[in-house]
Amino acid sequence: MLQLYQKIFSGEDTVEQITENAERRSYKRLEKEFAFRYAPLSNFANTELSEQGVILDIGGGGLRFLSSDKREKDEQLLMKLDFEGWKIDGVNCMASDTTGEYGSMLVVGSVMWSAETANEDQFEVGVRFTARMETSSFP
Image (cartoon, rainbow, N blue to C red; front, side):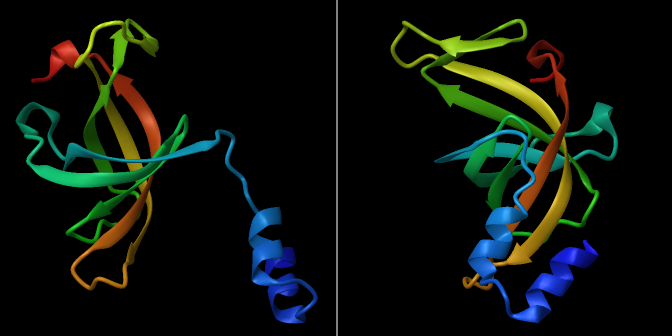
């Protein structure tokens, strides 16, 4: 991390070069917008997925979404993701032959960051997936 700060303040590299070299993701991100439901995970038994967000990009390790509320770092979220044209078969996610079919996935994630957008009543939120749950265990 110290090396990153030194590069930023040295003026040797552009911001684009620094951020490109600093990419640490293990999974590629798919830029695809779709709505999903989520809720803070404080008490699983009483959690209702009452909040809606719009996913901006998603990958094997997490997602980035728009929220009307600022989320706190390390806050745990329960999220229900519905993928059109896909089906979930146990642990596998695969393309569906049935038109209009949705595969649903229930995941828990930890908020890594939250930042206000240019639109003052919206926030971008970065989440790292921490667990996947059976959808049959939740409505």
